Amino acid sequence: MGSRASTLLRDEEIEEIKKETGFSHSQITRLYSRFTSLDKGENGTLCREDFQRIPELAINPLGDRIINTFFPEGEDQVNFRGFMRTLAHFRPIDDHEKNKDPNVSEPLNSRNNKLLFAFRLYDLDKDDKISRDELLQVLRMMVGVNISDDQLGSIADRTIQEADQDGDSSISFTEFIKVLEKVDVEQKMSIRFLH
Amino acid sequence: MEDFGNIVCSAFIVWFTLVVGLIVLPAMFGISLGITEVYMKVLVKTLEWATLRIQRGSKEQQKPTTLVSNGIILRDDGSMEKEITDLRKGRSKPQINGEFELSDIFYFSKKGFESIVEDEVTHRFTSEELVSWNLLTRSNNNFQYISLRISIIWVLGVFIRYCILLPLRVTLATIGLSWLVIGASLVGLLPNSRVKNWLSELVHLMCYRICARGLSATIYYHNKENRPMKGGICVANHTSPIDIVILANDGCYAMVGQVHGGLLGIIQRAIVKACPHVWFERSEMKDRSLVTKRLRNHVADKTKLPILIFPEGTCVNNTSVMMFKKGSFEIGGTIYPVAIKYDPRFGDAFWNSAKYNMVSYLIRMMTSWAIVCDVWYLPSMTRQEEESAVQFANRVKAAIARQGGLVDLSWDGGLKRAKVKDAYKEEQQKSYSKMIVGDDSS
Image 1 (cartoon, rainbow over the protein chains, first blue to last red):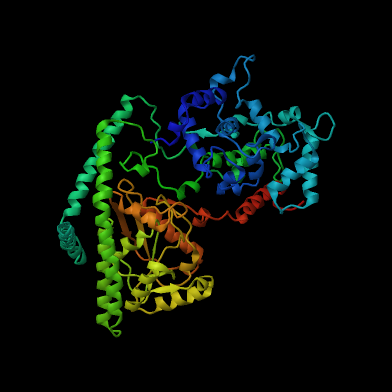
Image 2: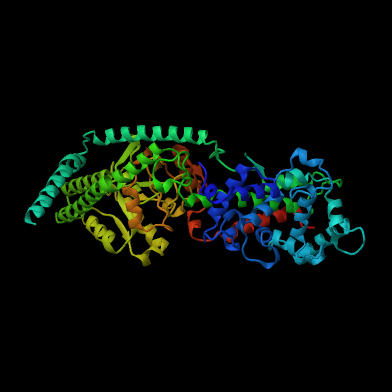
C-alpha cells in the first residue's frame, strides 16, 4: 500500500530525482513517505527539529553534524529534492557505474563523493582543510566528557602527523583520500535498500 | 403537527425497545443472539472481496506496486566495537587497541543516515499502515479510483457506519455508562458484605458488556485459566482507553489512575463507592513512594480485586511494546501479564492523543466497522531473588511481546512527547572513548 505521497509527487519530479540521484521509482516514493511522516509542520520542508525528533539520531554523538549536512549555506529548511540529494551519497554503488565515462559528471554516490562527504563532516569551516582545532572539536563530540583535553590533543596530533604529507599541519582532501585508500568505502558508507 | 410528534415518539419507543430487548438485555447476561456473528461474517466477506478487486484493479492499471514490506533498509546488527574494528581492517599498520582512525566517522554517519531513512520509534506513535484498504476513509492513504463497484460499496459503507451504526452505538454507550453510574451508586449504599461485592461485580460486568456491544467489539479470550486473581497486579500493553473495556468484559479489576473532572470524574466517583479503586489526585501522582505505598496496601488485601496497570504509561500503536516503567514492578505481589492485539482490518484502535481528543477518538471508534481483538492471559510471574525491578519489567515485557506478536522495544513511550535523554548519547560516547584510549590509560 503506498503513501499519500504518490498522488502528491508528480511523475516528472520523480523522473528528475531519479536522474539526479539514481534512486529507483519505488525507493523515491518510499522515501517521500518517510519525508512526509517526518514533516510535522506539513509544509513540504524539514527543519532541524524534525530531524532531532528521531531518537536514534538524537543520541548519535555526531547527530548535529549529520543534520547539518542537509542544510547548506545557513538555510533552515530542506525540501524533498535537497533531502534526496544528501541521502544519495549513501546509495550503494552499482556495478555498471564503476567504469563510467570520465566525461560524464560523477554520480553523487561515487567513492570520491562519499569520501568528500565524510571529509566535510570533519571540515567545520569548509576551507577544504581539516585543522587540528576542527579535528579536536569533532573528537570531542564523539567522546563526550570521557577523555581529557591533553589526551585528546595528543590523539589529534598523532592523527595529523600520520596523514599530513605536505607539512602544513592540517589534512587536505588528497591526504584524506590517501589515508583511507584501503578502507571499503563502498560498503561502509552505503545503506542497503530492500527494493 | 401533533400526529407527527406522535409518530416520532412511537418510532423512538419502538427503536428503544428493540435496542434494549435485542442488545442490552442479552449483553447484560452474557448471552449472544448471534446478530454480531452474522454482521462479522458479512463484513469479512465484503473486505475480502474488496481486497481482491483492488489488487486486480492495480494490476490492470499497471501502477508500480509499492510493497509494504517490513522495512525500507537492511541494517547491520553489529556492536559499535565490531563495526569500527571492521572499518580499521584496511589499515596497513598493526592493530593497537587504543587508537583513533579517521575512518571511525563512517560508523557514526552511516548509523545516523540509517536512522533518518528508517527508525524504530517514530512510527510507533502513528497508526499502523494497512496492507490493503479496508474501505474506511481514514485508513486510505493512497486513494485511487479502482472501480465503480468499490466506490459504491464505500459510499454504502459510509452510510451504514454513520447513519445506522453510530446512533445505535451512541445509544448503547449512553445506556451502559448511565447504568454504571446509577448501579454503582445504588450498590454503594449497601453496607460492606459479600453480597455487596457480588452485586458490584455484576453491575460492573453488565455495564462493560453493554459498552463492548456499543463498539461492536468481538473479543477472543485465550488461556482463561491464567486469569488474574484477587490481590494480584494485572499488567497489559496499552493501545487505547478501550483496553479497559476489553479486559473488564471478562473479569473485574480495580482501576488505577488520576482523578479527572467532567464525565470521567462522575464515573470515577460512582464506581469507587461500589468497590475499592485507586484514584490519585494530580499532586499525589508526583510522589512515587506514596503511590507505591497505596498500591502495596491494596495488593496486600487479598479480598480486593486485582489492580490493572498499563506500565508503558502511554498509548502506542499496537505494533510494538515499549519500555515498561519499573514502578509497577516494585510493588511486590504476583504479576499477571496480559497481551492485547487488535485486528487493524476492522478499525484502528490506537488513540493518537496528540492528534485527536477523547471525544473525536470515541466517534472514530464508533464509526469503525468493528473492534476485533485477541486477549491472551499469560501465566503469572513474580520477581526472582536477584532480579532488579527493571530486569523483571523487561522479562514481563518480552513475554507479552512474544505472545502478542509485537516488537519488543526498549525505547520509552514517553518519547511521543518528550525528547530522548542525554544519558543514551553519553553511553555511546563512553563506549567509543574506551575504544580509542584502550583499557589502560596511557
